[in-house]
Image 1 (spheres, rainbow, N blue to C red):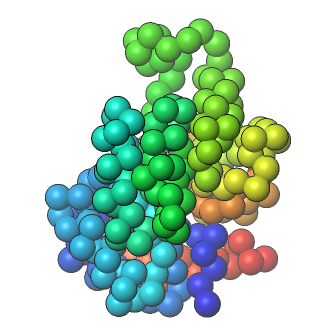
Image 2 (tube, rainbow, N blue to C red):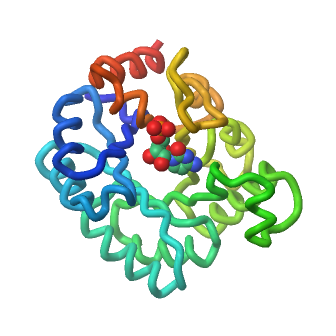
Length: 230
Ligand code: C5P
């Protein structure tokens, strides 16, 4: 049985290359993230193939944001793909609509707080409230969880503080921004090791380039699994 705390991000251009990678990883990996970049390249078909034919769990990272009725309808439609996790922006009205759309299905709704690519200057440009980004992340997470979200996406740097929120009790914290010890950070700024993120309170870690760009992706995934099992 694969350790589903590890979610591998299939950030490849199309479903064919995504499936090829998943088949190289084989039984080492049981949980995959498919994002917007692959949507027009057969991402939903890949989700279905991995789920139905390979028995994998699927995290569809769509970061939905729209009026409530549209979010609810979009989530209801996407839930037909028997997804495990689906992301929406963490605004309470968006989260409530997504929870309606997912009602009665096994899909868990995860809320995005503030994109990690955004700094204070970007928040100013977006006319977002004053204050440190970290505090706004916490407040948005608390509001999204109070609105019913099954969990939140957060950087490992925020996982500890989020775990301390009363609203986060029994909810999921999923962290990208993971780098095995010694790996290149790429464009990630606030990174943690797989074990560091789990110790900070994450339930699942999302790992992309350190696995899919590796010369031997299966060995790279195994190294992450060994580190978290140790
Ligand atoms: O390649 P890497 O491990 O950096 O990939 C991380 C994955 O998580 C990518 O799919 C990226 O889009 C996603 N992600 C992230 N930071 C966030 C939200 C999502 O890196 N805050």
